[in-house]
Image 1 (tube, rainbow, N blue to C red):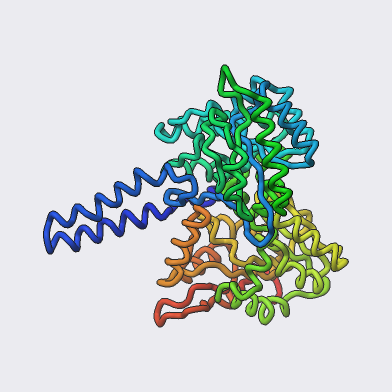
Image 2: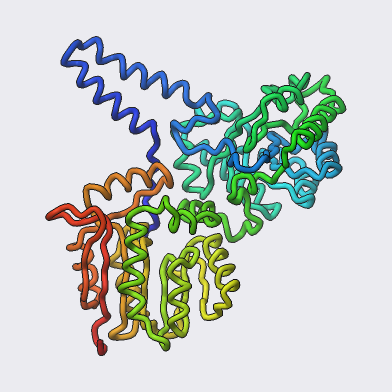
Length: 491
């Protein structure tokens, strides 16, 4: 199968631009001079947005954690530095305080002993570009890509792959999101800082931080000496006052990944350098995925999909069947199928989602689930399957024709292929836009005709092809349900 997910980093800036053009066109009928107003406001917003570290105008930016827990995360930028890092690590150890170090590739390369010390002490390491140019976001995409990739390559030499990136000075740009999506990364800035100018102004540093700290804050500090005259001892005293003040204020200091409830680095660099945007996104929500799909916030499509699964698929699974599920996730459908079949192979691109599945299976003493990280291209089935199923996963693939051919090769003659996926419709288009803004990926919605043609070409006999959810006459609903069998066997 060729091709991966279709990147589509759609941001509020795009919608604002479209709105500004529409407003300008409407105002031009009243007075041509008025048409310049919305366009000027849009340009102003584009110029101002990068300088607000918490702005999500150009891309999703994480700048704080949840507020339910009275906790914060400490982050230190610009290191490692021989003048500060060792002193800081010893101080953090005395107070049993974890931190995330947003290091530059050039500094990590220059001070490998300090880098290993940071990692060995259990702190998290994130990407802060290679050279820390304050004008990085004003440069071209190639330079931005090279700066992030060079830092990643350097840090991979220490056995870690950062997933979180913080731009120098917290400045973003319209180019950044696509580059991060390509690298399987996300942007983390901050919600609390002392404007210390890279430790050039450390007077009353602790008071500035503690005065306004709130639950969920990501605190920005610096692990660097700005040059001659820097008083490292005084700086260290200020950091210690922050640590003591946070604890006296009832704040828990958590690792950044705990505060955000998502990983900010990986310890298996060799395997994670090519992790794409889909894997990165689902790894980030693995801890909360079940609640979203089952709770009150579950979408109508998700609720309907579960009804279809329980009413239509489960009765097709027998006790002697071998089942293959593509896009198994955390096992919302895998677990019930496993209780009915001999064996089920659960494939998913996200290790985090499959780890959640493994934990649930162990809790319920289910032992007939085989897990595989990747997709159908990266495994070699030893036997044909009796049933192949998938639920809202095929929309990530640009070409279903190649997929159906591959599935036909591993499905026994007469075996069942059952799946749900996005159906092309008026309402689905708006969910596609929403997903592009949330994941940066365009989900492919198909027509019944295109799916029928692809299935027939791959040698399937179609038994059911219907749409559901927010059905519009003549066009159908948002969700398509398909039941097909491979030719050549008994039904």
